[in-house]
Image (cartoon, rainbow, N blue to C red; front, top):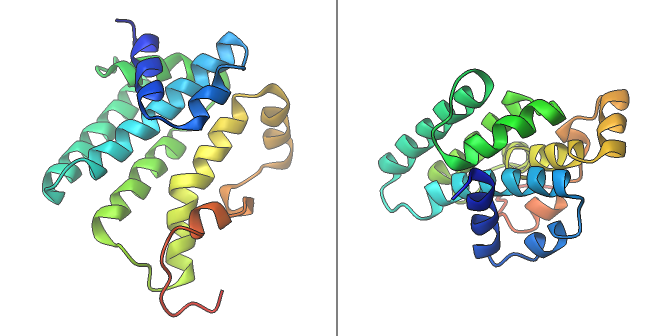
Length: 171
C-alpha cells in the first residue's frame, strides 16, 4: 500500500463528513488535504486511543521525530511520507505540524481549561493551525495567507471552544 493509499484509508475509516467533501477537490489538493487530515487523525489517536498517558507522550514524541524527518530526512510512517511532498509544495511550516502535536498533548494534562487564554491556546493548536494549513492547500487562500500574514489567532475559535469546558471565564 502506498503512503497516499494509507492516508486515504485512514481518512475514510474516520467516518467524518470531511472525507466525503475532500473527494470533490482536484487530485493534487485532494492528496494534500487527505494527508494533512490523516496526520491529524494519527496524532489525535495517539492520545485518544492510549490509556497510559506516559505511553501517549512517547507516541507524541515519536510523531515529533516524524515531523523533523519530513523537513530533513526520511520519514518512516506512511502519513509522514505522504506529507513530505505536501509540505514542500504548499510551504506548510514545521511549527504548524508541531503545534498540532502540542495541542493533542494538552489533552493529556487538562480536561477543563481554567481560563479563556489557555482554552484559546488549545483551540489555536488543534483547530487554528489546521485551518491555516488546510487553507494553504488552496491556491487563492494560500496567496491571501501570504499577503495578509494570517495568524491562527485571527481565526474564530468558536468551533473548538464550543466543545471545550471553561471554568471561571467571562467570555
